[in-house]
Image (cartoon, rainbow, N blue to C red):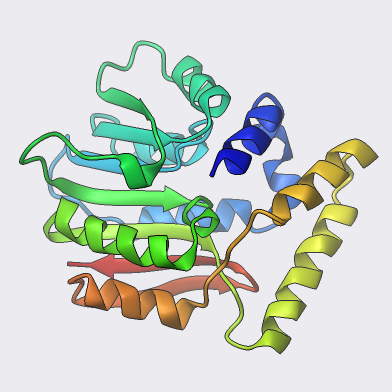
Amino acid sequence: MKDVANQFNKIAKKYESQRKSLIPVFDDLYKIAIDSIQIDSSNPNILEIGTGTGLFTNVFLDKYPNANMDLVDIAEDMLNEAKEHFVGNKNLNFYLKNIMDFEPEENKKYDTIISSLAIHHLPDLEKKQLYERIGKWIKDGGIFVNAELVAGETEYLNKMYEDWEIQIAIDSGLDESEKQKALERMNLDIKAPISKQLKWLENAGFSHVDCIYKVYSFSVLWAKK
């Protein structure tokens, strides 16, 4: 995961400005993910895995402005950008950690756990282990939402998805150096098919699991305990 941290630290200052150029479904991906979350409490306890610069955090706080959030990321420069965005918000706790090394406060349970474009950097075994931990960290009735990059269910589909992502980067309008860096970051992806991930979530104790949105490799995985 050190390579992941290094690559994203390099792009921290430009990360947000490039998102919509590299993710043509960006607005739908984030909106559908957050719209699918319904919490009774006005100040719920939330964990975000892979906070980055706080883009997904911001969309969530638009809906639940009084949420208490634990924000975890492995890239220090990315997390520092998030801290700058949310200066003055006393309800946010920032953790510079690999999520596999994170532990919530003793006896703490989350109403909802969210993640965006982060968990696919973990090897599959660690993804499975993380889902098991998420199942323990979340309250009964809680929701886990993951706006994520996924693999195709066959090698043919996976190749089609990857070719599409590469073409998006080529056509992005970014300068050549930025395009090259975007293509290099793709080499860090360890995507898993939706069918595997939904099975892992079921095995982690979630009663209702589904993919509620998908365009090629961009998807929203949804699970309710």
